[in-house]
Length: 291
Length: 291
Image 1 (cartoon, each protein chain N blue to C red):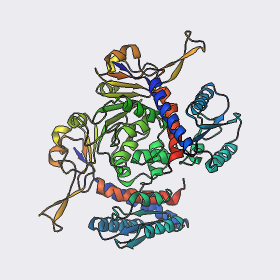
Image 2 (cartoon, rainbow over the protein chains, first blue to last red):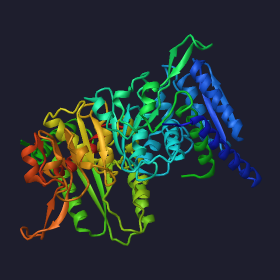
Image 3 (cartoon, chains in turn red, cyan):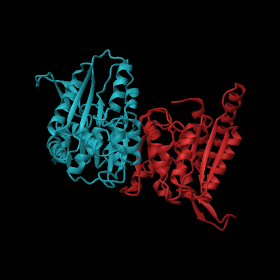
């Protein structure tokens, strides 16, 4: 069993991005500039955005954080989105989700110019990814593929089972894994809460991508000997072991599943660190090329 | 075994559309108007477009056919697309594919205003379908779902295997079948040319959607007793039985597969007639609502 070290790969990719940024500077080219809009003071969102800003610094990007209180109107938010769309200094930007309930997330996402939509949530990017056109791929699915690539895990013709059909992980990762490309070219199955006989489906998989958000859902009896297991779960569960009072739990019962796997991602330190790296890669792409 | 009569269902749906158009007229509302652009004189394309125009007449739509010779420039074509985008009289329009090689099909598709893209090929419609937003769904996948619905075939939690990953059938029908909806809510697997052990995957399916374009590919040994088989194949093969010198062959070896099925579509007369009906439904939708 080989552990997929997402932290280490994330550091390598960050190093590569930093190198590219350095070269761009030397050539007098524009330094990538990411903006993030943060609404309210949700603990998780604060942490994620802080990590994103820090990651920008690490690779030499410019970053701008735009904060709003939770009572910001949809109109105000949309007007800032419009401003960022038009601001040539900003190469890409994100609106940290979730948003307060009085604001339509979908409306805000669709208001973002898809050429600056480095989160890859805009329908046009989702569609372009599916068709196989150049696109901003949403961060977590892109991070998963990067891990498969860096560990040179074969995917062509393999039986890949995705558990979960969310718009930000399950569906796009399935879409990518079926493309005629590497990583990809896999036979892809999407399972979810309605799947009959889930154990039978999952236990035939060469590659399992668990993205349902149910702590320790995937148990050893559901996993074929030698399978590759990618754990996308990041549920906060109460814990007395940590200062914060909680710890992250994946969707995989790691201790019993790991011994059966050829490769497995831990939580934390697997897919998580790759998500921010994908965002950086998308921002670099937004700066380098226009599609 | 029950034969799914696509011709009969298509007639029923056309009747419903005609009824809606009649009511719209009575209420002084706009009559749906579909435009089609046809380039060159490809036999298949001529036939398809003629059928589409005729179907418009049958349901009381206005239709406009715009013809170009095969040497039309991409620029000329794009300028007509632009004109149709702006023409308030035209509710929806299609550009019949394939186009001559000197014209980028993708560029033309992306030039169409997605709100008039009744073929559902624009990336934004592909993305909206995947996310589960209101969209124009491409005609063949929409027709398949309509057949499942009209025959009240259960799909929730069922094992649905799609053979083929084309952008116009395989991928979008997979996307639809996994949505939290009826028809849909199925466990969906997409197989293709690279799939290892295809027979093993397909033979576990409750619903098989064969869309690979390989005549009589699906044989009885690949089909579970009681399965639902949807045949999307329409390959023209030479034939001495017909005046035209060819006949349509599906992807399913019908004679041996049919006895094992609970439901099966024939070729011709299965999915085919539904495709044009879906186009009519999309055009009606384009006239009725704006999303």
